[in-house]
Length: 143
Image 1: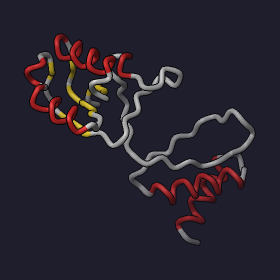
Image 2: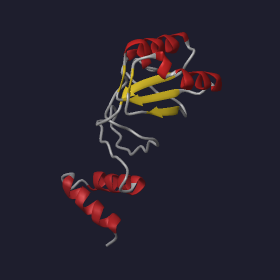
Image 3: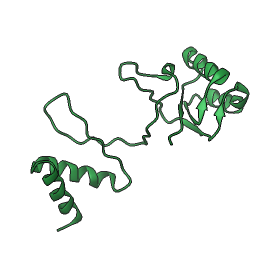
Image 4: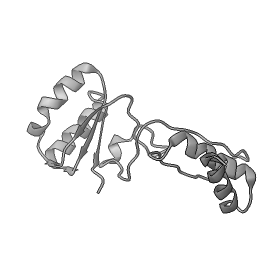
């Protein structure tokens, strides 16, 4: 049989011989290939389904709850953000000025992934987020 069939067989056996679940798992794996991440969650309803979400995910949250865009879901969602990635700790506003002004003028959002953001830099980001000057979120780098 094909790889799909083999995956479906293994998934079905793993799901207590539930062929519906086995087929869904095989379909999910076919959609995301070997590089994708599959997350299984309990649904609120009775329907079992596969949902493909584009983008990336890593195991760190926002540095401050003030970066939340949806307090009910406790998440920070940014649409097509610029992404600043650094292995440094950001503590002063001086370190960010060259980036923040053009981002604010562009109207786009910014995601900062850093070793840490604290002190004056964190305070300024939170204030700008609350004022609506910047659509921004900051999180610690994974690892």
